Length: 324
Image (cartoon, rainbow, N blue to C red; front, side):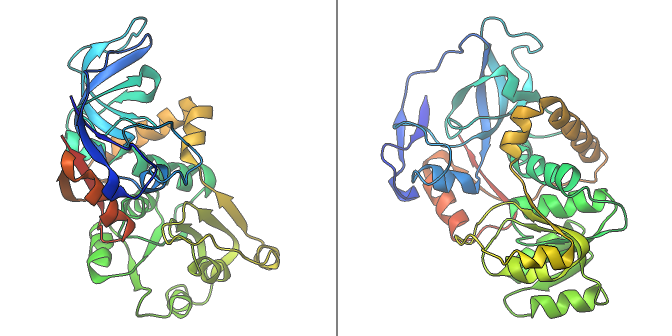
């Protein structure tokens, strides 16, 4: 079995493609023949030992996989060999096969391809939890999505529209804004050439937005916090810019607003039934044609490091995946 290995905590270019023995499923586990694996920002941190989850060396990065069940461990029920599935694991995805606890695996819609499924779980799971449980987004509200051309950003645009919100998409290039427009955004802002706060005032008639979704971090966070309407919600998703923002706490006081952390991984572990209901709703929207993940590039297994480099350098529009 071929697998990408992190043998030292270092930048993506140090990842190695190795031949390993075929893994065997443990009790309570499934082995999946990997069709594709999603590429996500946390992996760029995990391989450098900069993330809250710190695996022991050596390990295979990649946690968002789609494939077909090809072996079943003792005590597992509800799955059969040949089932088309998607799964979230902490590591192991950049490989031809992966063994995952059955609890982390769910069957995917028959109409969903392996490539699409590999780019679905983390981005849509994160954005659904953010907008439904954390923002409590309501029909008719206005949602601002930063980093709207990336994987989680585009998912947030689509889910926001499905929930009945007006969505303003903000991104750093014309290509990313076109992707957000395809996802259904009602208004677009290029924050490299436009004054973000002035445009938000213009687009909301000075009222401000009801919620903003921020996977970027950095200096824009405070700008958006100042642009919230009374009672608004600021969703802290991540820090793709590399800068964790710091804000004066008088701003939430003056705005009567919430700064809300979004950690989907912890939510799905603590509330698996609620997470499952989220995915039931997501799958229904997908089958109704209301969600359409945008995959911009597929990398072969030996180019997994380059996929992570491109993601880190914010060259990616939509989702990219690694395919054995």
